Structure formats: C-alpha cells, structure tokens
Image (tube, rainbow, N blue to C red):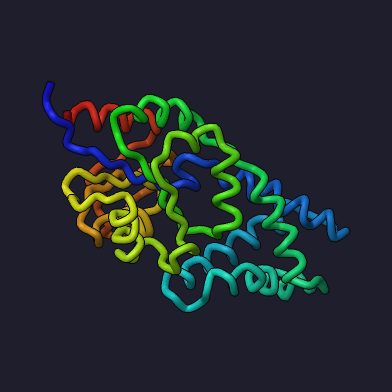
Length: 234
C-alpha cells in the first residue's frame, strides 16, 4: 500500500463542520426575547451578522481584542436600533445560549468518523474560548479530534501564521508537506494555509465565485468530496 500524501488534517469548525448559522439564529432570537425586546429575524439577524462579520475582521487585523468584541458588537447593534440595553449583560446571555448548541452540517459526522483511523485531525477555529470549547465538547464528533485550537486561547487568529505554528508545536508535528487545511473561508482558512506553506482545500458549498486572487490547492462543494481528494493522493 502506498503512503498517504497527507497525515494531518486541519479542519475549520464553523461553516465547515458545524452549522454555526443555526446556532447563531437561535441564540440571537432567544437573547432578544429574554430581554423582552421585540425580535424581527428579517431585520435584526442580517444587521447583527453584518456588524459581527466586520468586528471579527477587526480582530483578525489585531485592532480589537476577543474580549472587547464580545460586547462591542452588541453596543454597535443597539446603537443602530436605538435600543437601550446593557450590551455586556446581553452578550453574556447570548454567549451562554450559543455555547449550548453544536449543530453539525450534513455529512460532517460521517466524514470525520471515516477519516479518524487514518489521519490526525485538528479543529482550528477563530472564536471565543468559552463558546467554542463548550460547543465542541457537546458535539458527537469531538472524540475524533486530537486537539482543538481556539484563537482566543492563544491571542492569534487565522490567517496569521502564528496560530498554525502553535498548532504544529502542540501536536508535535514539524512537517508541512503532509498537512492539509480544510475550510470555508478564503481569507482566514485558505490564505492562512497559504501563508503558512501548507496545502489547502476550500469548502465552497454555495459555489461562490472566487474573485479575490486566493487560489486553494483544491476546491470541494460537498464535504464527502474530501474523501475523493485524499484517496487520489494515496
């Protein structure tokens, strides 16, 4: 039997294996209702997602800390909505609800269960420690991963090479040519992998146009297509 090209698989979490949008929708609505705020999913959810996306980009660029962004995003949201609610208290409630939900994307459980025996698998995520670790421990796939790397734990986020260097050191792996990162975000996952010098696989289920000049090693539109890539490289 020929040797495998890849021995280590770095999986992004949200949007790749975990259905974060479902958890986010549930947490935002329940937090609004717990503060007796009328909730309109068509108005509040997209506005929050836009603000949240921008503030995480600020975090990736080191212009805001993970701790500060927790309440700051709701401060900005409530300013836009002209709602008088303490953003710190609201954030605490939102994060508590969010941490309780670990919805998986279709075929995620099947995929990692199949790959478990042949690959060392790591979850590597830009996220908040209290939320991500709790969610992951609740999930049925947590058992399959050798390690979980959360950006807030180390103060470095993808696409910075520091989070990849930390990951390799933690798992005691000093090779790059047998490492593959799989993720849905071109900027953080794919560019991060390119920056670090490892192969990349862009999970693009919506078949979005890639117009930003970031070129992944592979592109898949369905999670189980990853198996085909790995088999071809054996």
